Image (cartoon, rainbow, N blue to C red; front, side, top):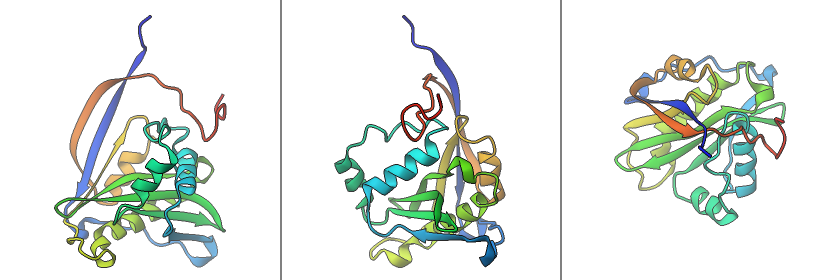
Length: 193
C-alpha cells in the first residue's frame, strides 16, 4: 500500500530592520482586543493555543510532545508567547523564538477559527513583530535583534502570505515538496469529522 502525498509549498519571509514593519492601526479600546504576554511557562496553555489555532490547518509537529518537552522549550530564555484576547477570551497567539546572531523566528502565529476575519490578526502580527524587534530589551545578555523571520505553507490560511507582506515581510525562499497527506487533527479528536 502506497502512502498518499500532497505537494506543500513553504514560503520563508523576513524583515531585516525594525523600519520594515508596517503596523496596522491599533483597535480602539471598545473592541475589547488586548494582547498580553504569557509570562508563566505553561505547557497546558501553550498546547491549548497550538491545537486551537493549528487544529484545522494541519499543525502536527508538536502533537507528540510530552509535558516535559513543552516545559523545556517554553523555559528557554527569550522564548515568548503573546496572546490576543477579545473581551477576555483567547483569540490567537504569536510565539517568538530567539536564535543566534540577533535572529528571532516567529515560530507560530494564528487565530482560533472563530476569531478569523475580525481584524485581529494584523494587529497581533504587528504587535508580535514589534516585540521580536525589542526582545533584547527585556532579556539580559541577548544581542539586539537584526532579523525577524518566519515561514508559512500552503496548508496554512489562504491569506497568510499576503498578511505577512502587508506587515513588511519580504519573501526570501520558496520550496515545494511532497508530504504525506494528513487530516487536520482539530483541537480534539473528531473535531473536524
